[in-house]
Image (cartoon, rainbow, N blue to C red):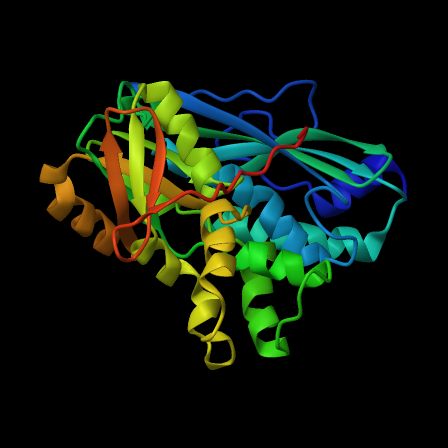
Length: 322
């Protein structure tokens, strides 16, 4: 199957927001009056971002999910995306399953494919997503203020737990691995929560490279520091509540929740006075949130144990070039 036959068969869909859709030299897209475009790109490379045996349908889901997560972090509504795809060879069964996973999530968020490119090469997926947000209402990393609460959505660390098991760094019982692997390979972008937090959150980002590493981006942009309580973060590792893992060491839990990547949850800050509004946003978006710490004036992150003791261990986040 040739390049253009592949595009037409698996990736040609009617476009409603772009006058041209897929197939011209450029896609055309315009936000509604009073709105700004929010744009983000993420690349997934086999062996770096996903394992060779991942199901193509799940890979299609994740490729778009990680981009929608960026829109969620700034409170944007998804509009459209482009897809650049490098394939080792033309594989109809793989493309069918990949496109099904991709478009199932795209349709769930009313986000349409409007262009891209295909070529032959090592399996690489690059998506650029476009969203819109009311002018001046995007949630940025630079708005955190001293005294703000620090929140995270959903659960943390299960993706890291699954990855370590798949890389044979430890063993997990099959039912626990299946539960954790779902979080690794099919993350849920918190789009509804992001939009519900506009006007409430003072800053936000999505957790892709580990909670502490990503939180540091907010702290640097906002020129503040933070304190985190592990008594609030340890329960966020969902797998640790499984009967087969209830005796998991706290150090292992901390490594997953504080430094694990691929969670794609939102970490955000909000003034103490907005706690009831945060709760309402959580309820409206059907997304649980947990308050885990406080923004402080002193630079850096301080981690406190269950008894209030200062923990000195370091948990570095993921760095592609470290």
